[in-house]
Image (cartoon, rainbow, N blue to C red; front, side, top):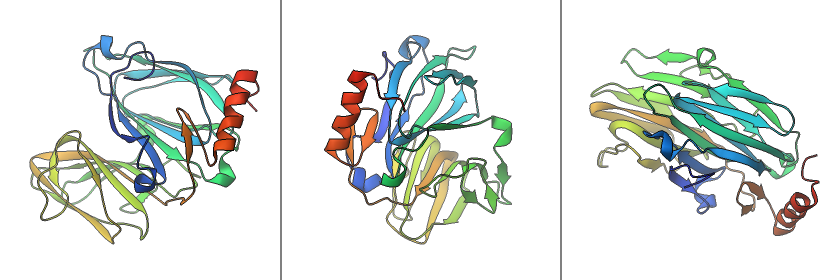
Length: 266
């Protein structure tokens, strides 16, 4: 449970930072009942990271301490670079059927960019390209490049790829991966086999790949849909307290002092 009482499933986060570097956390906040999420995430700070929110159903209304505000709906993405520090709130709105589906990924910022100026890249569903391969595999490319298609989110330091991939029943997808990059898959519909010898991985399954040259996925009897996430590791120290992620405990203590003193926003 996070925020003011949002029930969610955390795929990873708050430990194993070396394992998932440069990613810090992935939350699955799909909810069937408004009572489980409607109180949302009231005003809270962020520093030193990027938060990436991807909606599938329902809406999230957001506003921040420097005057930005808006709503992201089904298929939309908000890529927020917190940088030197920002306060914001994220308040869910259910769809007509009461459901609200979405995911939030946290990506670390490199030491040199921790105190960069905060910014948003808000991308609407119709701006995200949909690639359909000959074998029926569909990919919504949010950031990075897949199958020769570039996503609309740009200028991200860790060279990430972030995509929503759907493979039809019995279909296969083979994708080359950058050497040395962290590669993660999070399944949220159907089931798939992610190595030839592995059991089928279904809804809520997290797959972390070893360093290699490609990812090969075979869909099960109901097809499979998943988030495909990759990025260049930072190999830097991590000092983490809640929504603030720095490199040293001294930097973290500075941030906490600034929060108390009202000097957090730069």
